[in-house]
Image (cartoon, rainbow, N blue to C red; front, side, top):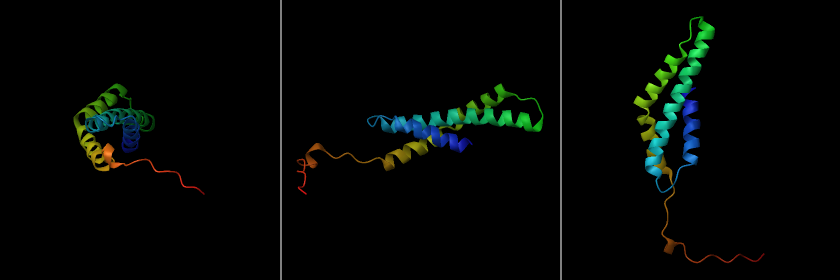
Amino acid sequence: MLFVLLAAFTTLGLMTLDPIRGTAGALVCGWWATFLAASIAAFVTQVLAGLVLDFPAFIRLAVASGLEYGLAAGWVPGVAVMVAYVLTRPGTAPGWSSGPPAEPADT
């Protein structure tokens, strides 16, 4: 569940990323996605464990634990997202290299 949420939040964050500040934004996006996904996954896990295993649910403690994990380990997915963004973004060509616009072909 953590990986599914992490992928979803990272995709949502990268869709809104500004190309000018892309590299730093990708790092923050990955960190934010981990922070949010870990807290939600910890919450859901604690609720399900409380229902199935019949012990008191410590939901606030579970969410705090997820937030701590996201804060401490979120830089790893953040760096991975930043590297993937840098390696996969299309290069921008200078304005003089595009040439004049092409004429439409007659059919």
